Length: 244
Image 1 (tube, rainbow, N blue to C red):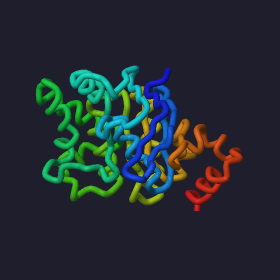
Image 2: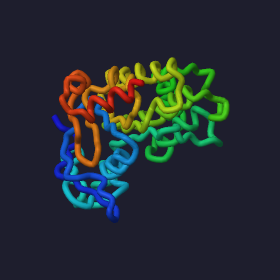
Image 3: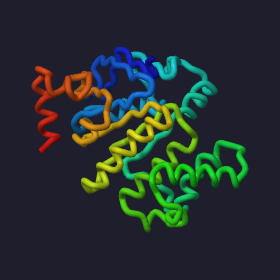
């Protein structure tokens, strides 16, 4: 079952064509990748899906709803099904770990504080961090720990769709591998759809169920085995370049 469907999407800023009539779908409960070179329109595309940028031409359906002409109430309901992990975590520096994880629950639910704290500690455990890290502040965390805390915050509201922007960016190889393992683990235990913007070949090979490569148009749509067998020179060169 498709959870996101993009049809004939075109985006242009001045003379710069960002998307040229692109179409693809994301299936429910898969880990889907959006990859491409700098300026390929990956972030613009995601911002259109999450309703931060307007759709200029074409159609995007999310959870069965055409998002270009829905009411404000409907858009808010759909947005509550999203969670977004920013590239560098975007943790609040003045809040400790457990407070960061609790932010969305405090803001958007009427749950009692003791239950919110219990959920936050559960999510801390799910992402593989010890209870001893709960009272640390972001400045006291390693890069890998910051990503895990940001993931714990992102899953706190149990979203149907989780967006990850370069989740392994800036991490050493060991931390990258652990984050990749964690992403697959989260998908398996939480039954969510995960959409990843990534340049990391390890993530592309070991985490993604399927992906598209953008270069104004969609150059490729499929899995890693199909990509390496592709006759498309740009696809093969792109994957070779990412593997260097």
